[in-house]
Amino acid sequence: MSKRRVTVIEVAREAGVSPATVSRILNGTAAVDPEKQRAVEKAIEQLGYRPNVVARGLVTGSSNIIGVLTPDLASPYYSDVLGGIEEALEGTPYSPLIASGHWNRRDELGVLDVLLSHQIAALIVFGSSLSEADLRGLAAGVPLVVLGRRVELGDLGGASISFDDEGGAYAATRHLVEQGHRVIGHIMGDEAHEDAHERLRGYRRALEEAGLPFDGALVTRGDYRVPSGLLGMQRLLDGGKPLTAVFCANDQMAIGARLALYRRGMRVPDDLSLVGFDDQPGSPYTTPPLTSVRLPMREAGLALARFALARLRGETPTVQVPSLELVVRESVVRRR
Image: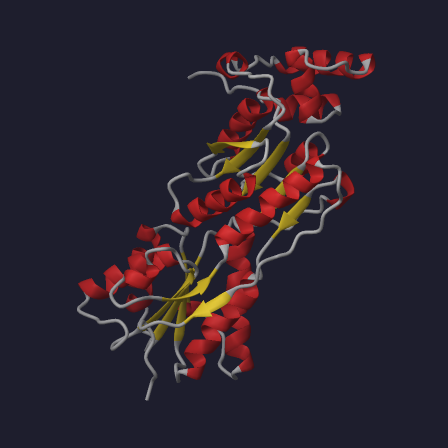
């Protein structure tokens, strides 16, 4: 088995400097305080760091690159964010360099090595598995803006944007309650992600405000992927509760849940109402069209890129968090 590769972020943490400082020392692109250089060299030796040869060979020397770290290039959820970033950068001197970390912190650290080796002017991160310490270390050396995380970066000139996931889940569940549903299941997102817990809190708050008891047996855990929605719905149906509706923590899981119902000969919404979250591009075209909470992802991408551009102009910008919207379609029926 090959030895795990040490990353720039780990070297920076050991040396007590920012990842950008380590990158500048490795590439010899700027003068660095001798004491910091010695600390970095010592950390490199102690940790056995070996630079990414491929990444170093790709260095362009450009200062007009904005790095973008996403967990999944194929996801429609994130493709809209990327579209917004590209739109905001049109007509500017800056171009995005986009890379995926595959929902894995170790992969993300390796990808950041590549991005930092390009002497990026700023960094945009969304859906990341990086720790708060990782993100703060990055913000200390490069203008950073993060989507989907609540991280304090203002003292370092960075920012984080997070949606009102609890409020969106509350609106979705409240809609089901208003349509007469009293036994409402929930397929939760990945427990490792803060937004999954916020959406669970919104679901629970809507029930309790309506005088309906929260029942843990009506909650099952998924991971935001289609198969987990299928399995989650199967567990709910096998639980013996008289379900009339299910709120899924994202549209992907709602697709899987819909398949589980189809295989049991159950129809949406005649036999069970279904609500998702994210309002992915295909959700208006499912059978039936899916009621969902719309996350304004393209607008979020615009906000991320505009923040980075403002920071590069030397400004201290504020970030406007886009609001969520419940989009009512045909997957919910009023319960008589």
